[in-house]
Image (cartoon, rainbow, N blue to C red; front, side, top):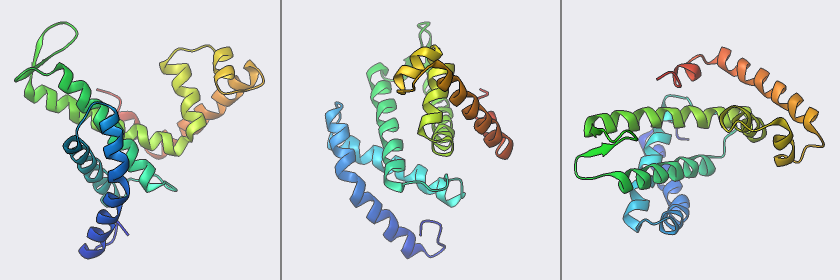
Length: 186
């Protein structure tokens, strides 16, 4: 229904989605140091991002819309809360103590939004287990034995086999959609 060309149907779908998600978004933001207005802002931003992806037909197949939009909402709140805690009036300092102009902050936020979008696609297309295996191994540098324990596999070899299967699946995804790789080359 979101990909419909009939404006009334799109509006009705967005209103329905907003009604479904606002209580969860509000509770989440309030529980994590924000206000009701913050919840409304991040939910609107998440819905806009979702709507744009739907319009471009770039949503993963077989996705649970509410869960997907809520995930975007949570990620946007985490970034907003993190940015607000570091913002002074017009600049943001990076780890080196150098002030970064607002324009650079917006560019970095846009790049992070694109990465988040592609990570969400990867997570949905790879599946939760494969996504976890690859994140644990490549980004968190965990040992296969530890991954086996975290995922309740019977032994290290099962985790190695799963990682191999997941890498194969990831390579297939990248061949189908090369833009996934470009998103992480910044």
